[in-house]
Length: 258
Length: 212
Image (cartoon, rainbow over all chains, first blue to last red; front, side):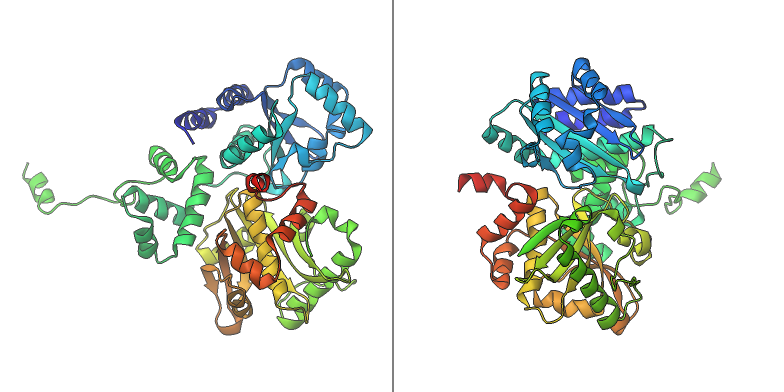
């Protein structure tokens, strides 16, 4: 995980409309130095929503030919929730062979990796990266970046759910009490072991709350999650609740004497 | 053998699915006395079976269900967040790295290694998809089984006492455990990866698979 990805995710977080998501997808494509990258929310009603770096000509071709009905990536990933290397999909049908040929000549790339995302109330989306590479190089790329790509996929989806309030099935939730506790103590410099002990939970449990908070905050690691939680005022350093009054012996009498 | 099957793929395995849902009725209604719904086919199915979960199923030599469990991603609807979040003081667990695992079921009379094989299935999912932890609801009777197979969870919250105690558990996948679990399941690493690849198209630990 490098600083650039964090910056891109921060920009994604600021997005308030689909055009900004589009810009983020382009920036991430450059960041990963891949041929293409896209986010695709597929509704049950057949409406497609998303963004990506594919050429307008290819998108036109795709929509016009209704390729969503034969695209092995869509068919193979729809309603799944495990990341999929495109090689693992079924490309054996006549229509899939022809489709693949067209996609490659449109510059999509000969390799691809998709992360299906299941959101609230059966919402479904797909985040994909594709490239021209050997099997070995692509394997190195996907294994090395899988964790970050999964985070990108969910960050795009969360943002899309936020922007498209009308499409969104239910509101996303702020940090839970335990998540606030855990991040607050970590922000205070407690070690994981100390936090676990203080909250009377195991370190594995602590990890689950950190991961859950990290995901909600779109953060790349624990430090990033803490920084974001502090920046957004979700936690307050020092451990006091935000509306708790301060106190200092003698302060009130000193104030009264003035 | 281990099968990894999404709900929408169960129709390809009619005998396996039929015996799985019956065995679940047998375990959860008859043996554990849970208040679960059993339909006219004798199937124990709930709302989460309708959400196209991923099942890890042990298939016996005769094609019948030997044991199973059910996975769902925690960003969507899960039993823990929908119905048991009060056990965690209203906290929810939602992360792409954490899946929910429920309905851990063993057919009556199967060898104990089946339970270990199911745990192995969970570990393979962890390796293959980057899932680091699983969360799930379990009752007091399961504690002994989990201990026996070396998969005791951390407890996030509980309600009730004695045999009526219901808890939310958190399992953390540790690749180091894999060898131990393979031994308990009486399986080789190769055969496990083969079963996984048959379901998902390639082996869970792809880089190692290539180097080998």
